[in-house]
Image (cartoon, rainbow, N blue to C red; front, side):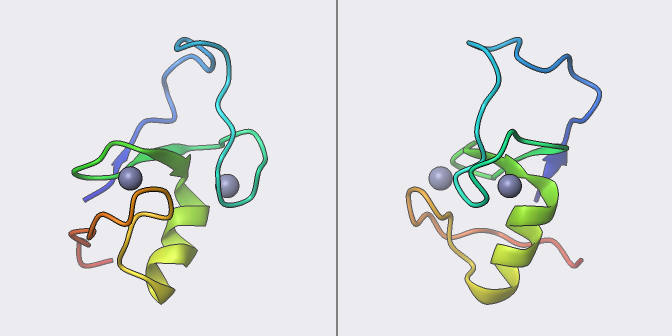
Length: 66
Ligand SMILES: [Zn+2]
Ligand SMILES: [Zn+2]
């Protein structure tokens, strides 16, 4: 399950975050469940079509029916 949160002010936690997938500034941040790593929504969406694991910690993702 993603928790899209694109209404939060960017950079409120230690400056802006880089997406580990595209290495760009995160747009439309998505938090993974249950590990809470952060990625662009679109990046993790594409990733999840290939692997149901977090790119950072390999936690199995519980994918919603998207
Ligand atoms: Zn990204
Ligand atoms: Zn993770």
